[in-house]
Figure 1 (cartoon, rainbow, N blue to C red):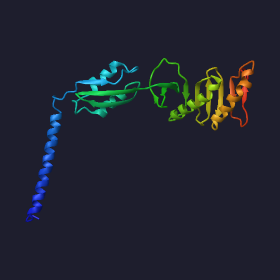
Figure 2: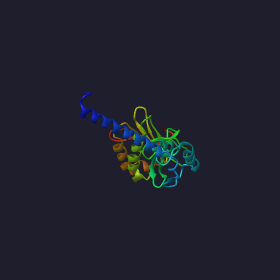
Figure 3: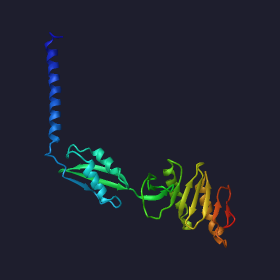
Figure 4: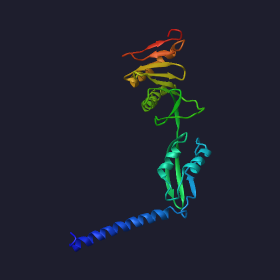
Length: 233
């Protein structure tokens, strides 16, 4: 090997090339970290409606470090996403010398199990709101399923001009809904849409004509349903 001049020359050239790359890399990192590339501004693409300005300023002040080139975009994104009412954040470098922050805020669809909120994507999040919202009751990890069923059943109820104020999914995966006029519908564990559609079709000719409106209707029958009047449940 040591008497192989071409091989030694190739090894020396390779080592020199590696050394040069490492030197250039180190120099570049040093230059980019110099204060001559300061981060001069943080810009929001839109003004948040629910996230307090002081919390946004606190993230910028306390959790963002480095200059335009060295600021950690992923860490910055996570810091903003940890704020209340923030669902998703996009962070981009914007020349010259600023960051552009796009914040997607949570849109509350319902209250979840009395302690949290669920958004329009079926995701549970912590938040406080004075909005009048329907109530979702379900088991852990079923919020997406409950949200989807809420949309489907609410659409089916449109001919009656009634809305769901509460939808429940029991531990045995049986569905129950409460309407805005107080009526409770038992839908069971299967063919929920079919049962509700059948109820909607006959309601104007049956229950709507009663002197006292039914307050509880069991739709878990194959070819019909049972209605219970106030005082009989």
